[in-house]
Image 1 (cartoon, rainbow, N blue to C red):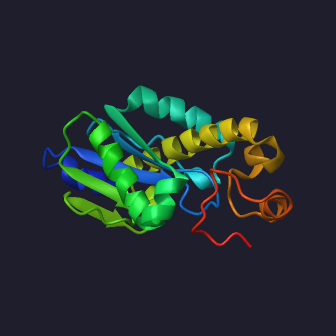
Image 2 (image 1 turned 60 degrees about the horizontal axis):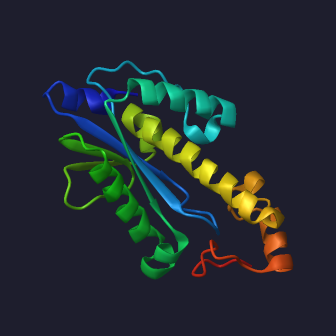
Image 3 (image 1 turned 90 degrees about the horizontal axis):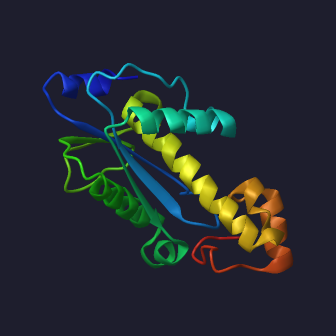
Length: 191
């Protein structure tokens, strides 16, 4: 899981892994995270964030915070997503997360998204192939879940705690019953 990082670390280059959470939901923001690990960090995560339980993700999140040289975060809300589209909003969030690092880096590894203006290696399934990217994926998922739990308290009838804004049958049923909220993406098909 560090073969891509190793090729850069061996050249004394600092790697930032970047990933997002929240591209597919009907509600809530897209959250991007950038993580810089110390060069030659041994793998300490063995699966993709989507295959972890919430408790496993929380434990990994604490471990990542303890090990990382820097973590940058960014949130782009549904209003901006509707205005510029989800791909552009994802790229915007990723670039803002990199700016938030406040630590120099030479190379960016992303999960399949090509970021213009950076020395960027977009990997298909990057969160499974790159430790830095996997760490970014976990932190992004944990942070976005916390945001959606907050929205659950604001809009309890939508049950955001359970589906996190994703287009589940339950979420669609609640949308038909109550209509959309301010955090729903108007440009996404909700039927």
